Image 1 (tube, rainbow, N blue to C red):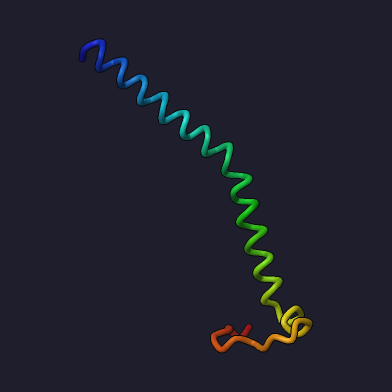
Image 2 (spheres, rainbow, N blue to C red; image 1 turned 90 degrees about the horizontal axis):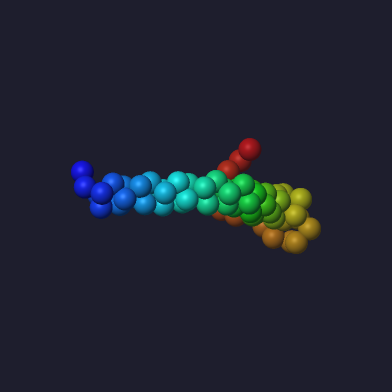
Length: 64
């Protein structure tokens, strides 16, 4: 392995570590956003909110 190849491997490793670091930093806010959206949709589709907004049950709704 030449010095050029070694430097390239070190730079690639640093890029991977930087990417993982960014993903770890962004994961909690992103998971929170998806959770908020999911819960909002669940509430919007609940029987109570459907009744308050005069919407009928969808044809493909599961019976719980």
